[in-house]
Length: 405
Ligand code: GLY
Image: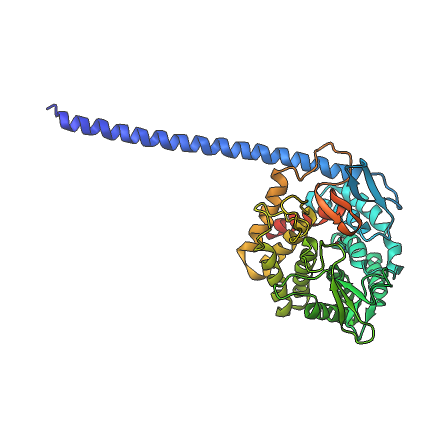
């Protein structure tokens, strides 16, 4: 018998199921379209990155002309000799691209550029041995076991050790401004300690390891403010061996938080924990990382202004290199602490760099990847430019994230 109520119920039910199916169908299709366009975007981005990598490969081999930065104003590449503190980054970038891509052409070029740095192992007029020798030969050694590379690292550590003052407990950073400073030590110097740890591992000579610990302990004691940010330069009195000045050289003012300096501190103390497993270093790395991440002047996209205390914020340049130095450190720090905030920050930085105009256009004729690093305020130079060390820590972050997966 025909029941009008039952029929109506069936029709409503079918309609609801259909409607539900239609909704489901719509959701699935939208999801597939989104996946496809994300995949396409990712593919386009990878192509762009590959183009940028090739610009490094194409750069003419010249032992006296390491590419350091690109001046938008002069429209030219700034080239420096091997004694410059940034010389090791270019070879390091080639090694890291080789690790990321497996393309042998990068390895070949990396070896050639690395060889040009060797003479720096005798250069005792600078503390930047780690930046120069470890970013080049250290990365080389990760890719191939080579006795010559090991010997160069040990010799470099011996040379760097000549700048260590036992009573002050630090490695002297700079030799300039002798009329103003007695024994200047900058926070950046923490980055040279990795070379010393590795030299001890290679040679079995614990002297280098001990110097690294001493230097880090002195820095830990004197270099940090109550809010866990770091001063840039500490000048030690050569008679009392105590700090006599706490100042800046590259920041906006003596008491400001220069962004890259905070990065060197976070990166340096995270590395200290890697080699020693001493919690005091981990605590400092975390404290300064938290200062950085929670700072009211850190922009939403994660790329800091070049100095957190520049009074002209927000109308000042960002520093991509500082973001990359911190992003790389925080992947490692996440590994030790499992604090998700650290990993989130690193991923955010990578995402910002990839989805905005921080990566140079694919045909831009310069051997760099990222734009908008901030070099040296004291010289008013390299402000808002592609700089080689921005790329170095960006690539290191990519490798660390890949290794994490
Ligand atoms: N080590 C110098 C700098 O970070 O600019």
